[in-house]
Image 1 (cartoon, rainbow, N blue to C red):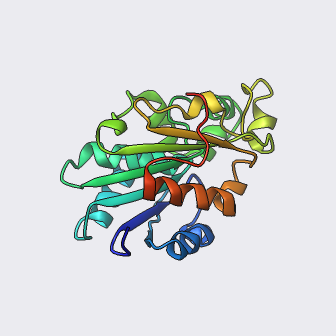
Image 2 (cartoon, rainbow, N blue to C red):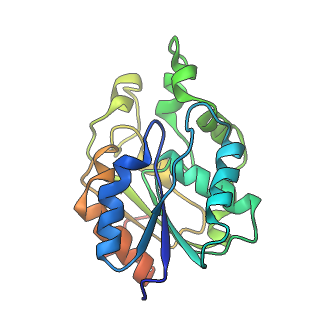
Amino acid sequence: MTATRTVVVVPGLWVSPFFMRPLAWRLEAAGFAAARFGYRSVRATLEANADALVAFCRGRAGPLDFVAHSLGGAIVATALERAPDVVAHRCVLIGTPFAECHAGRRLARYPGGATILGRSLPRWLAQTRPALGSRCEVGVIAGSMRAGLGCLVATDLPRPNDGVIALEETAVPAMRDRIVLPVSHTAMMFSARVAREAGLFLRDGRFSVSAPR
């Protein structure tokens, strides 16, 4: 692998790209050129955020890799579906509610919950999922440390989960590999182990240990 491979790092809901710096730094130390993308996760629509990511990617030397946390994975999947000209190589989704988001649906029932969730996540949950696995090689990192807001708003959140997203909710059709790590949803952004596994998948197309699909 050469340093010319660019990894676009995409944060999740309510998260500034500033907080993705530790992950980006670790990917750079592994030999990648990391580019952090920011978007309006609450106020903008899913499609608007996806189009902003497409604009961010165009003009960069491809093929591109992606590492996305939580809602960021939905933005990446939607962007690649809307822009066939953006050439993607590998994509690592970290705690992304690709199949479902039980905690999000529960939060939407609380007063003010829909406002907190913003415009992108509900749209993602209401639509047919993009065929991300047909656009690039997909690796999924899920967490098993049950600590987070999801446990409070959804006491029946399926286990194992990372405190927000259940393991079963991270499944992506045609994903190439998946690993479960003992980290919580928020801690994934700062975990050295998560960054190391993401780098392994981007380099080799597999994690150090595979989890059941």
